[in-house]
Image (cartoon, rainbow, N blue to C red; front, side):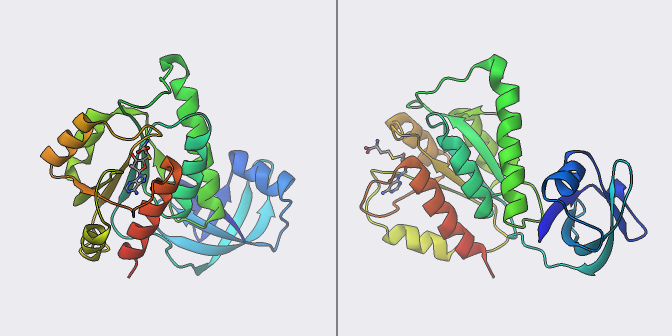
Length: 244
Ligand code: SAH
């Protein structure tokens, strides 16, 4: 079943209007017809199954027939991803959204080799956001996770300060026993931040700052994982700890 995100002002008397790019996608690309069922998430947090009733010039009208289950984890899960090379970030965004991430913050770290071109940043973030939206539809999320503008590591640490807990998978941390203990303590409603180093890993200075701020350095096992594997492993572990 196809999924659409609709703003509450487009919902009236049990009818939702699908407009814009979504309308064209629905009508011209996947060619849904009157009578076809769709899943609708409204930005109020409500989710419905609906039936396409009618097509107007610029909208598909969907009658909301049944409530649908919420698919979101409680509490936030934010990925602070050390800026990796080229299209790796796009892969990470897609998969992180499938795993239930709430927010992704591309984070400029000391060993990030990619430097951000300020002139291109707006279009890049727009592109990343589109990838997040497509993944959210595919995995039937109830919200579209946000990709924020890239932040410097120090600013990201500050931004993360309000989380219940911040985990820093660190390649030089020993033994995964401590990780298991920390994961056991995570409650579904907790806001969890996850910091992942880029290909070159974390610098010692970055780890020092993390520990100063009471962020928890953890091991993801005795093998070195690539940055994308580490991000998805950490998210999977937290996802399962947050499930009820
Ligand atoms: N270049 C480094 C590895 C960096 S891996 C080296 O060769 O040692 C990129 C990031 O993935 C790391 O900064 C860390 O955040 C995460 N990571 C990879 N393997 C890990 C592990 N076994 N435990 C915890 N974090 C790990």
